[in-house]
Image (cartoon, rainbow, N blue to C red; front, side):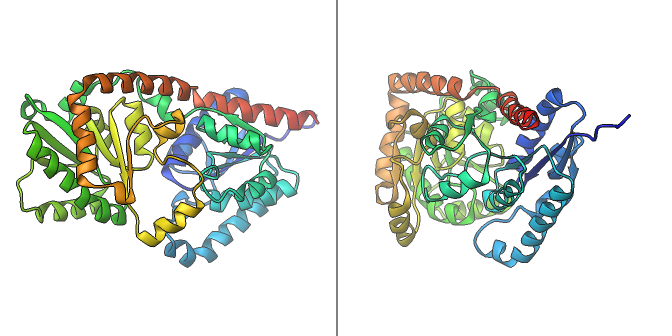
Length: 390
């Protein structure tokens, strides 16, 4: 009797966030295909699920403009090897998780050879460089998006899409617990009668060098107007911690600012208000139901170029999700200590505003809480079974 060869599912991730998504996806796909073999590139969480990684995941984790260029020959070699592997051992589906610069070209070449392809986590094609949609349409049989407005964009451009929800919305409880976060940060004794303000100037060196000094000026402005404030600053990593330490050492005033290693999630949960540079942390703060102010500055030339390319009205995810200005954004020349400081004090002294915002954030949280692993696995299983049925 002829023994059926195992069903192969190809997966490639390039970053830690992708490894987390990949592990959840593999775990759930096993319920649909118990004997499936998962191969490609993955990190420790995927390896723990029995994944076979053909190259170490950290070889794909390149940042910035210069490093990818220096590593280009190696990256192209890895992609070529993966293509050859998957053409020899044809998977029922190939799933590229995030890392669009690497994965979309691989998806395109495999799809041309008749292999079904999925891209999980949309690039910000809806926000800028919208011309990329043409390449995506050629590269994928199915796009899986974490956010509902992304799915709307793909539908409008006739790209097959499934909105699966955001894993963070599944992970973060609907009701935050600030007292527990305060206790975990060992702040219980030092915050009596105080309001906590979290300042998050970014995770990259350039962001911190630009946003840090602005945020300290905001702290000075607010502390001069209201005496019961404690400012908490979580550092993204060891290098940022050192950079923030140096910036704070240069301050002439003795501001009530405390620098905390990591733990940005706990710091935000403990805070009465969060002031942050734009990014994924805006989504995290929203899911933690924290009133927030988004501020961002880039070099003038960069801003003038981006202003021409960017096609969206807002930069903060809460505003993009609500399709209206639910939290204040101060971009470029509007990002001043007085404007940000006044918005911060307004939150602290207007509980009604905060209460309304919390209700909006709860609605948005429920919208994103879709059990994303199961939704993604179900959409991929339907694609595989559809392919097998042809």
